[in-house]
Amino acid sequence: MMKKINYRVVAIIALSTVFLFSFYVMPSEAWHSRWVEMKDDHTLIYTPDEKGNTIPDFSMVGYFNGDSEIPNVPVVKTISPAEKGSSENVIQSAINEVSRLAPGTNGFRGAILLKRGTYVVPGVININASGIILRGEGNTNDGTRIIAAGEGQRSLLNVSGTGKVVEVKRTRVQIKDDYVPVGAKSFNVVSTKGFKKGDSIIVYRPGTDTWIHDLKMDQIAERPGTKQWKASEYNLSFERIITKIDGNKVYIDNPIVMALDAKYGGGEIFKYSFNGRIEKVGVERMYFESEFANDTAENHGWNAVAFDKVQNSWVRNITARHFGNSCVTLGYGARNISVLDSYCYDPKSQITGGRRYSFNNDGQMNLFINCHADSGRHDFVTGARVEGPNVFVNCTAKNTQADIGPHHRWSSGTLYDNIATDGEINIQDRGNYGSGHGWTGATQILWNCTAKSATVQSPWVNGKNYCIGLKGQKSPGRFKDRPDGEWEGQNREGLQPQSLYYAQTKARQHKQQPK
Image 1 (cartoon, one colour):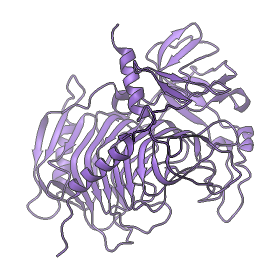
Image 2 (cartoon, one colour):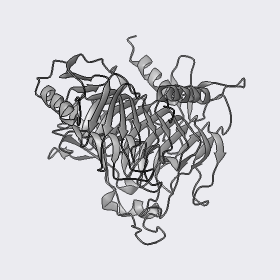
Image 3 (tube, one colour):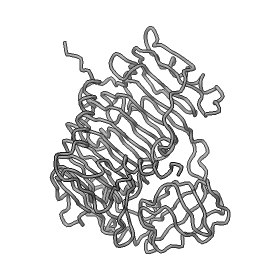
Image 4 (cartoon, one colour):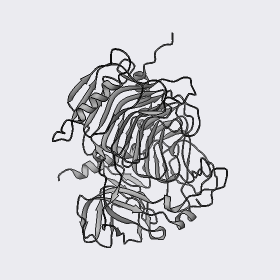
């Protein structure tokens, strides 16, 4: 009989490892980056480059921008597994029942407690209403165990609202500044008439033929299936909130993470709505497992948990085992999601493209903390045209089959903070990989990470990438002639602050305290 693996113990070991990698400072002189310096009073000083770009503040990500603790929502419904056969209807009926409850003044309908035991689910569980928490009694084999039974490539738990970004008519105005640098939280517009503090706006950065050409993404070496980049596919929409207006100057909550350059079309802002997006949904303390036919089988559970068109929500303390792709995947409509203390083990699929993206993010202002993966490919990863800021912090990967980092077609504004892997972390021009992956992005920061090797290159134009305090080898990447990123302190112990995300969070909270 095969010995049962205690995944809680494995998780504790993995978490201990990342603390050793990330926070133990050898008895050597402490040093700080030339780009960010931490003062004794916990304030941070940012040094701009020749164009005024700075490393941006990544602290306002996750559940309610990190300004609210994730609550312990009271239980309003308790269920147990069906005595035999499928428990899918048991779970879905409970969700539907709670969905019909009126939200409380805090916006929550209540938590559904799934008692310890095995719940067999041959299909998909859906949450499509705000304020619902799905809570188990443990993320181990002997806790609350949800089984993706039988065949069918699917997300076992699908959390999704409806709708999309819809521009409010006659609110679009041009940004006047010729250049708005990375890190900026204000800029001038033609007119602020009709705008006010608290408005949800899109900071719009158009794709242009000139930008594509200068990036050389209309010159990708051809092979069967290669697609050159088209400007119309690279219009980027960053969701922000106005915090202040001073004349024609607009202040925003989260920083610019991709420079707005008049040479490449500049930028605009407009008000928007996203009717149908749900919020305050939580998934916690559960163990998800997929049945499978063999080690390379793919007609089975694909993602344990998928979020899209959801905001200000969370996943915490879950384990996923044997899924073909991910533990958690966040879609383009997922915003301000916190994914905490979660584990992705032993995926079952072919080891090739489009598989084993253990913790995948395509949304905005999302946060992954203390997540761990084993035998994945792209374990902590963003996809195409991902608009930041987004953060992965204190995460580990082992037995990796590919690399960590932005995967393809331009992600902007991601912090990889204290990531420890036995594989690679890469930020580069991937050329004609896939159907023309090209440049993976800009404003990608590796901070105090540990890897077998890393490639960190900066695109030809319109952005920089940073590698600060890496423990590991420097790799030339796929193309040796691409511009090098900003490298600093390779294999040097003592980087301060040890975690950029936590230092930025502390600095912001200190600044917000009453004087």
